[in-house]
Length: 139
Image (cartoon, rainbow, N blue to C red; front, side):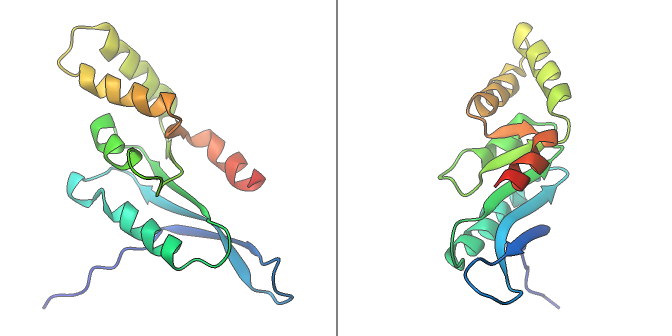
């Protein structure tokens, strides 16, 4: 028997609302955790965040993805776009940088992976996971 497929963020972070005197919270950030990014499910992240954006009250929350995806071509499929996602935080950012530098230096058929990675790093669309806590804490 078929069931509906529901997409929702993995972690939602609220802060006390500055507009009400009650204990209500305003959405501060939504984090989608994807250990890897399956190509057929990559756009689910956009759907998750698009729903939050359309139904929000107040300012736009931080919308971030946390991943350990080893293929830049899969990461870039969600990094490029119209701003639905603030940034992608990679668990192995330094290791990926090293690996992509090695690919770029060689005459590898995988050079396009290194080019995709460098594009995301240069545009600050992919960042080290270690920066996430500070970004969320400082607003």
